[in-house]
Structures are given as structure tokens and as C-alpha cells.
Length: 64
Image 1 (cartoon, rainbow, N blue to C red):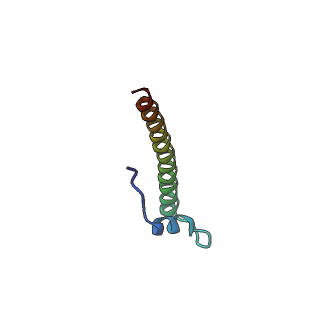
Image 2 (cartoon, rainbow, N blue to C red; image 1 turned 30 degrees about the vertical axis):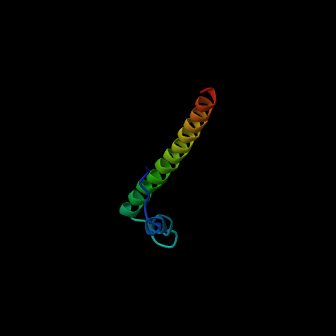
Image 3 (tube, rainbow, N blue to C red; image 1 turned 135 degrees about the horizontal axis):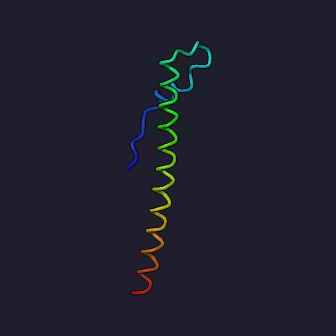
């Protein structure tokens, strides 16, 4: 399964609009943007693989 993270970290990621960004908060934001992207890609891949497995097994069971 894919590791998810709390909504608080997402809030921190998108809440820097009113504050002056420091290097630390910019690096923090970049890190969590990468985490979001990675989790999105992994979830799409997981869904695709599970769909293909379901189709394969349903076809295989019909042949038997």
C-alpha cells in the first residue's frame, strides 16, 4: 500500500502565501510536492495493475 500523510502537512504546504518564504519552508514545500506527485503516480499505477489483474483473472476463470 501507499504511505499517505496527514492533512496538516498539506495545510503547511499550501499555507505560505501570506508569509515570507524562507529557504527552509521552500525546501519543505518542494519536498511535499514531490511526495504528493509520487503518491499520485503510485496510486494510478496500483489502480491500473489491480484492474489488469482483475481482467486477467476473470478471463482466465471463464476459460476453465
